[in-house]
Image (tube, rainbow, N blue to C red):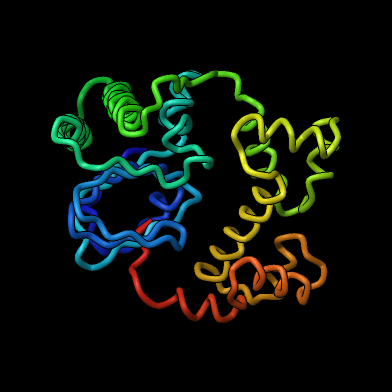
Amino acid sequence: MIEFSNAEGTECTSYQKEATRIIYIKAGSELSIDFNGFQTSQDELYFLRPDQYLHLGTNSSGSILFYNKRLYLADLEDQELLYGGILFNSETNNVCLKHDPDLAKNILSFFELIKNEICHSQFNKESMVRSLIKQIIIHSVRAWRNQHGRQSITFPIEPDFSRLFDNLVEQHYKAHHTVAAYAKILHITPKALTKRLVKCGKCNPSDVIRKRIVLEAKRMLVHTPYNVKEIAYQLGYEDPCYFIRFFTKQVEMAPQTFRKHFQSGLISVA
């Protein structure tokens, strides 16, 4: 349910592949999150959902906290904090907190407390760890607000329209590829859907749909043995040639070229 790992190039377990991760990465490390590469010039903190792929360079160091969905079934507020909210939101994908002495001191102290709880069979260990993770996230949200000048962020229990659309895309991106299909689910017109999302500060809904399909295609190309035709079918494309044209246009690289390029390099750890 809860696990700690050093942020060094090691293979992940099946448990870790299904876990949410909080990553404290030290300066001088190299990492890639869903094909976006980073080199840290200072200590940084990352927050990853289970569906995101993390790769670390051999020179990377730090700590990774893994926890799965069983930990945050306590109540809706815990679910929003431990697995949702601004830090894990797809709209702010790959949230990164830069080094701050006070934040680093707080986070590392919480990490040590969680390690101690995990290593020793304490009474009510799970509740204690949940509380400590919750404090890590609250401190991190406060730091994110300060770093980005956003003082009005809240964690609504009921998702707003933007979050609702994100969730719909996450559920249906393999079956529905058009704005009209999602507008139909929401019982509004495509034009009204676009207006509402723009009002929420989101990009065009067609861009959101395309980006999610392309991300999954990238993941499948690099992390599964399926061929391009099989990937196209799994993503809802009956014509593999159309899928290849679509992918090539979005990525500026053919699927097989993308696969060859990314299957060598950094070691996958989550």
